[in-house]
Image (cartoon, rainbow, N blue to C red):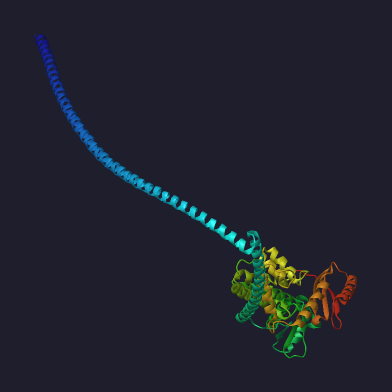
Length: 516
């Protein structure tokens, strides 16, 4: 009974649950259908709004496009109107030009007609003149008894003789006037040039003196058995004269460069106090470098003073060497600067190239810087130097012709030759005796240096002695005797000199090692 009740209850519950489930499904389905219907309505509403908005946008775009087209059409119509206006103006100007051209053409035609008429009148008048001339010539021929050709010949011969005589007289007068004027101008030019050139007049000698603090220093200079003074003379090539003159040592040498090196070296030795052959050798080397520096400086100063540019550095060094070179007692560098200055002044007065004239004047004696080292005259040596460093034709011609060895071929060469003569010819510029002496000393050294195996050769004792240092490996002791005899013989044959000359050949062997 109880079981039946329970089963019945369960059935009821199951049925109730089934009905509830079906009811829930029905409600859920209904709800879903309502949502779908709502969504479709919303979608339909959005679609309608989108269609309306699209149609509105399309209408607006069409309106804007119509407005833009209307605007562009208006602008094109305005531009077309302006172009038509411009074309109309151009047509008007063209019409005006055509009218002016027609008027000018009419005027030209009128002028041509007038010119043709005048030409006809001129031709008629010329014919009339020719007829009258023919009549006049015939009448003259009848009166004179000469034909036209005969009269021409007679008149020409008479006029020709007169012209020849007048021309000859005129030429002679002009030549004389030109000569007088040229001589006057040349004299004035030389006088003005000399007045404008202010140079020092200094006599350069072949002797230098060195002051000593006391006479005791003389003994130290001589050294033990004369080794110090012998070392100085051998290293510098000068003669050191120590006599009774108080506190003074005299240096003599024809080569002023060597003499200057010796003077500087001796002064340094006196100040230093350490006088021995090794120290002497060190100071001579140092003084040699100092003199080389002075040579470079003097060359640069000369170029700077004259305002000359573009010279090769080697030429500047050669110019500096001329500071220690003399010619007839006149300093060669001072003379060259003087000639350059004179040449520049004369070139300026004559309208020539001033810089070129100065350059040629400065280089005219450049050969004298090494004429004691190279065979040949200073003219030929200077010409070779200038060719080597590619100087201009005017400079080469001035160097080659300033002593008259060749013919001057340009105005600069004449100017340099005149300036050289002025500089050398002024009072106190040169001394003939000094040049003769230096030439003799140079000749002595050239003879000795020409022998094989000679290392150094110096003329000392004012040219009364020649000291020759030979290379021990090349000249033996027996060869020394033969060399001395041969040199003495050559000197007797080639050199003119008073008294006697001693030929002293020196062969010295040294051994040197460094202690570490």
